Image (cartoon, rainbow, N blue to C red):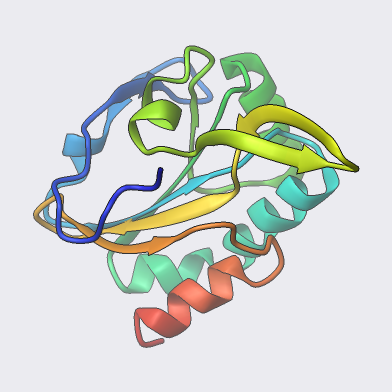
Length: 153
């Protein structure tokens, strides 16, 4: 189940692509775009990350932090970020701490096969750490643009 608008966003501390611990609470006073994606270097996830990278200046201009989270390792994130020049924070969540706290670990159907996995989804968290918007099952190509439109680019 996705979390509801208006509740405090669960805090977490996870390692970034350099192994440095990053907490959601570090970003108080800023809006945060928290996006969950299935896997580094897969076609949809790469397009989504590159779309965020291409529009990163727009987020920075609005004082909005962008954080991507997947189950991939720190080393995988480092390679992914270097390969595509990703300027925003990528957090490794192999234990699914944030993934489960945000309700994005769900049953998925792929070609009739049912398995558990990360549902590509985005949360917008306000400056006080409250969930402002929930975007379940987002499209990789339009997610960044939709968020900027919502933020009033």
